[in-house]
Amino acid sequence: MSAKVAKKKAPAKKGAAKAAKKAAPAKKKTSVKGQMYASLVAQLRSLLKGEYDFIANAANFSALVYNSLPDVNWAGFYILQDDVLVLGPFQGQPACVRIPMGKGVCGFAAQQCETVIVPNVHEFPGHIACDSASNSEIVIPLFDGARVLGVFDVDSPTLKRFDDQDAEGLNELVTVLVAHEEGLDE
Figure 1 (cartoon, rainbow, N blue to C red):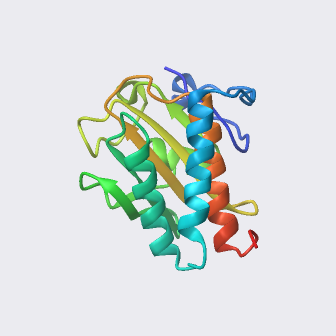
Figure 2: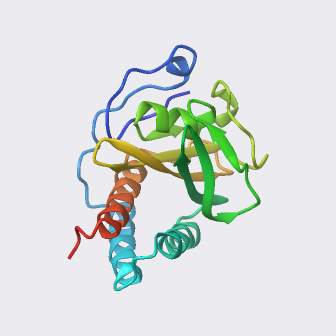
């Protein structure tokens, strides 16, 4: 199994390090997937325009991703409160409410400050199975400067569903959301 990093580099933990490897930044390509993410960025900017309530924006963000990406069965946020990720707005089946830092894919990504791609969640040490239909996952941390605010998590019933282009596209979407919330997009 491999996990790929698209944001900030940090050393991996033992056990999870065997299940995760860092990838070089994805090369810019004009592809169908790249065009889809560019379209999603434009749609997101339109959804965010004039609205600054994080819960409302995160709910629309989750719905946009869930309904736009193929082969996705869950998309949503976990917000960091103290040392625990707490369930935020999402689309999909009911989910785990609290995830300790360092636990599961979400806790690992938040603790390592890295985007993590897991081609097969059943091979990830300590994976937390909220939905037994999920087979692959990508988790993108949300940052306020160097501080992690939470993560955006997307699951798929398809093995090896996510790649570097997904990491790049989802990181761009998350960056647009955070910049908007911080008032940096005006």
